[in-house]
Image 1 (cartoon, rainbow, N blue to C red):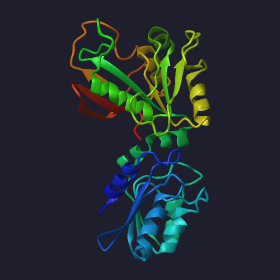
Image 2 (image 1 turned 90 degrees about the vertical axis):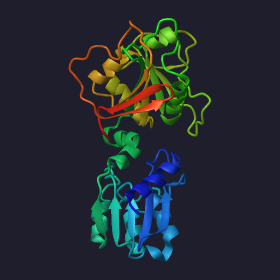
Image 3 (image 1 turned 30 degrees about the horizontal axis):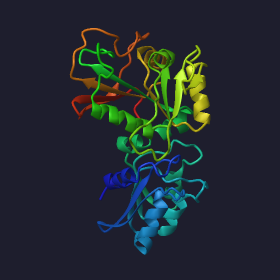
Image 4 (image 1 turned 90 degrees about the horizontal axis):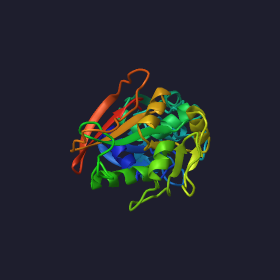
Length: 312
């Protein structure tokens, strides 16, 4: 039994706790799993759900939890207090709580006589990467998504699409998982995109659909125009509760966000075709950007490259 199991419990819960972070917790006694839980839609925290399942067997047990147990009175009492009261002997957590209003659970547990270990898990941080950015930086977590040919072009003569059907479906799943989707004014005027999530499950409803542009939008295009400075607009979106933003614009919009250091993650679908011409992935930048945690995996006939500008 380990933190990996708590991560599995959290991933299985999906986004049912939104806009709260998704947290998983398991209680282990003498090597046996005696309780598990994830944050519920009604606001009950994962630790409390797991403790309720464990009952009296929580006394002397070890709890693995993906996020530092909270130390404040929110929609529920402090989880740290519930853990101490249950007699848990040891807590291992994967990520610190970036919310200053809720942090401090580790110290509270120690004062209550619980042994605490911080595992510092990147996967635990990644689990709530959008929420963490929203809480700590007061702006949405920004993902730049693009599709390119193998020679780096964002256009393919004679074809509307670069990526394959599986990649395009994946994009609709991405839209269903974020709070807002955006393009730049040039893409809005040239393509008149819908930016909605189609033929996929949308448990949180459709994302907000935006266009970052100083100029007017075409008549009849159902996109919100955001014409102020990017940082100001992102702050306003965060105030509206937008935790995640998917950029689907062209190289100019991508360069503007990157130059302002407002992109957190890149998703690039590389299709097995050569264009021989066309625009590149990003317009010129004032300086290079170093990416980290690069991964690659197949999506249909394409390859999806994922990398972080700001790791979680």
